[in-house]
Image (cartoon, rainbow, N blue to C red; front, side):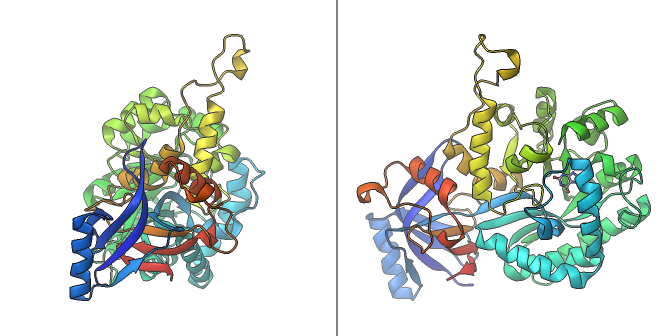
Length: 454
Ligand code: XAN
């Protein structure tokens, strides 16, 4: 992969609340990072282009209807649930797991079944502009390692977890770890195997310690995984304070909320990604912040399985890192943009006002709303920050994980700018999150490598 230059309109979050848009010349170095970014019409931009012409560095020039923006981070995807995306959402979480999801995931014991599913999923996520993904795989080592290989082959920046689940009270015979020792040995082998994959020297694909959630794991397994994450310096992912049923279950079993229980097992660390977290209290959030862990906010999935909405503003006020998750297939869309727009919508619905004239049941949490700029941040830099990755903004020093959007692609739902004027950057960000679709995504890069499109 060689260096190149790309010039055109760049749309990027500059902070959690501000989006910037302007024509720029961007230099992507051979290591896949942004080496320089200059506003077009500046002497520095002219010098860069002249240097490119002299040195034979390729230059890609975008038209006025194209936009360059950071790629999306999807912090929560159940890879083996791809075949049931958009199905079975009318069941409650526990029934859905037992009747539909565990039987489907059990089929991934067969790598010949897993391979084509994972192949299609990875390429579809890239086609939707996802440049970083965090996957729950299954309990099966061979097919989970195959998922890591497929991510590496296609250039998706990925985090892959071999799922650990051993509690016979919830997990069916045939789809659970057979003992704590077996689960721990498999997880350790998996961590080492992912790190040693040929072609993974840069760590593009990273393993994650993955206890499914407290109800699926015995105390012995949770404790062992906490110790292992520290020993191996490995990221962790799990579900946390997810739904009314799950939240009550954990309180009954442990006497505390999920966050405190996870902390006691050593599972709350910098680099832990907690999916959902709808039922976290302010104390829970303070603990998560103190440990440096992050939340994967899955607004679409929460509408079906949680019986609650993440108080996102409260999490941010507590200083917690938050990104977005599609939660396939608890969420029905593979698009992080759809989930970003849904996050804005869910926050507005939470904020139904606090008019004392209303009955208590109709009062919301005032101040919950988030802007579309904040939605874009969640979808890009917020997610990357949660994982400790230098990506998610098109700024010098960041990895060039980017999407070229074509606003006039055939089949586009994005309307052209009014009178040819784009207006405010936030308006454009809003339009992209609300109306973009696959036809608009012309090209995708991860770490400077073109991984989708032309
Ligand atoms: N909790 C879960 N929630 C979800 O949305 N999907 C799952 O597969 C799962 N497992 C535990």
